[in-house]
Image 1 (cartoon, helix red, strand yellow):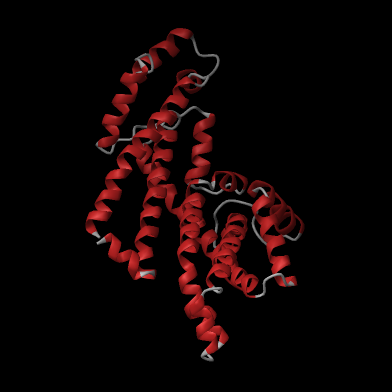
Image 2 (cartoon, rainbow, N blue to C red):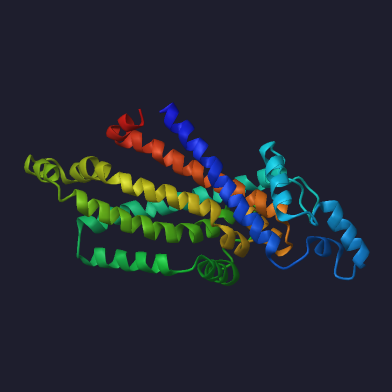
Length: 308
């Protein structure tokens, strides 16, 4: 088990290097001059050139990337071009907000997706099955930013029940968490239904029913446990996606998370902040996948023996 964990952690290194190289190249070759953005459009040319030299922007691309990687290895992600603050500290302050939002969105998705998926599978081709699959299709197709705007319009503007944005108390979490969880719930519903349909047709399920085992025991103990492996995979991937993909939702609801901070940094061509945020989210996504793989061993002992 320990060797498996170490192997996966070592695999994180080339992933982060690839992500950092891609993002650094995009930020370097897209139009815009960070020095000009910092000093303003009316700044004299000599002041802009002096600042570019001071920031190392006149160095070749390879030299700038190597310098960034060398500093990042020591834990120095640089300072923000716009605010001058330490990038790591800024991300560390905002990441808990993103993590809370993603975790609550995942909980909502699981509480909706798994029961509806089980109900749909056990009543295949019924009205419940057709309705749940139609709702799942709508949930997958509906853009998060549109759903968020509609929820703000209904529950904040018209009804005045919930705040439209920011982070004041627990009520501020409701609308963005539901917005995030809706699409994931639809995906989990479809995967749970598919996996349950495959399991409940197995011989051991028919044997359990023939022995007179109660239907709820057959479904919850025998079928669901064996159908959980692909569902856990989807839940883990969705949680990772919500951590790294909550950019639009955080922007719509003015949520003080890493996603919104990254959008603001991209607008200002703040390369250190964008690089730090992307690498942090990539590492978080990879670690979530590792936790999912470890969770397999507790659900299915056969997989745990393979880790050993």
